[in-house]
Length: 261
Image 1 (spheres, rainbow, N blue to C red):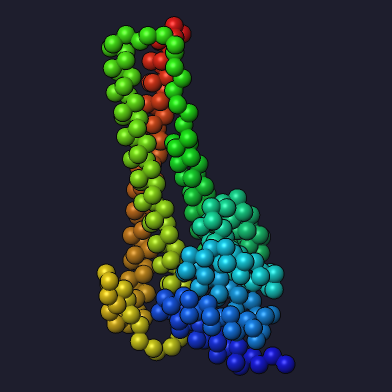
Image 2 (cartoon, rainbow, N blue to C red):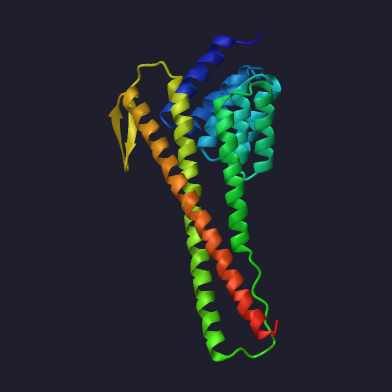
């Protein structure tokens, strides 16, 4: 016979640990709850969120899949799975998961927002791949005049600088997306906590005691700021992508001149 009260107690302990960002401890409590009752989809959903906090995205995805298997109507399961798939760079799988969830609730705001983020992540990954894997310029087999050689060398330097700048902005974008997702997960879990326990906000390397209301306000502001940063960086990436493409075309034209084309 399942001792539901004991399982619920482990769940509450897990929730309190999660709120304090003690993700490893939270995983332990949720696992204890699952040992008592492995048919409760909420336990798997919560452990998925805790594993996500630990950046154990494979484990987060496995728990989310089990959550969906137990209760296919639980929307949070699709959200958690797609989040983990995004971090694993499985963007096509994430879009498929989101579509399954939207088939049940076409107006789910979390899934609709995550779909936009997933499409953006996929596009940025493809752009980064294109910039990083550009084929080296072909050689002409013929001697270029000194002026053309100098122009080509200058373009190659500019191209290299643009590519490095693109990769740097992309790295900042990825960091911002990760931070925003963690803030959203914390915001979501904190909103479900009705306890009056003391809460702490991270300020640099120290933790400062604060009210739930202040922490929620801080998280909301942080999420919005990350969104603004991402918008600016997206525009920067689009600009750099066009510049890289133009520089490469110019180099190819110079090489073509040397080959007599």
